[in-house]
Length: 320
Image (tube, rainbow, N blue to C red; front, side, top):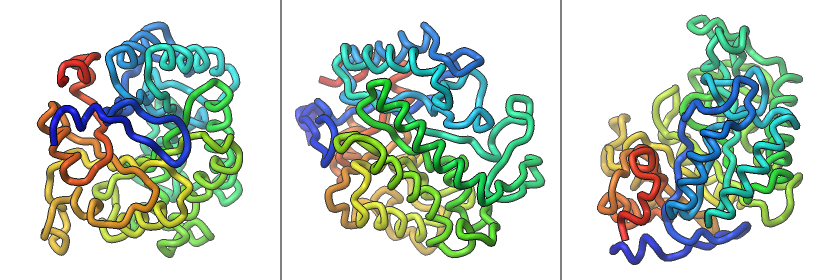
């Protein structure tokens, strides 16, 4: 694997090709206005990564409901008031030469009380004071994810990524520990997957045929089980509704935490699974060209670059 491989284009079932295998990871930049409206600083920060050579540039997590905010200065996509800024950003990323993606997010029980007042999640949570969503509220949450994707499409983004990682609300529904519901969104593995799969199907049906959809999930921490997350990966591949899977591993080169899976690296557990038409990338401590080559050699189609992109907006150009 050489630098030339890093700079080969990548094609997807739907949506535009990426000019290389380097994507800007969604980063918590805390630059938006309190209303969720894009700021000038945020616009400059993201468009600099587009002109800096990244094949795809993804926004920070953008909350799909006002009560789903996870951090101060978070970009919003829950209101048409956000459209003007989002349209400007999508245009700027395209002009900079990058494919654009807006990450769809709701923090759930990880929403700070001082920001949202009453946090909500899959189930009641004593540690955070969060309350469980009613079934009707879960259905509204699903619809708001879909509406947010349509808003991103209207703004001119090439696609969206559904944030199902890091213990945020969709991950909370996936978790057998956090999700203690007794309706159709809790209990069995099938039921716990229901919400995120309904979100993905809804976006695929609501948006144009070439709208690019990714999904991010993390197979460990926040109550996840690696065996189930491998099943979830295979379900995404079988359904063939997403164009890429973004594996957020915190460390792309680590071994699994669960003893029964320590026969190979965490990443390799997924690389050994059939992936059909779905492209797969990894995020976590990929800081230089050597690391990028390593994850590509392992079988990834692309690498998500986080901290290294903070240090150098033109990270891709430095590794040519």
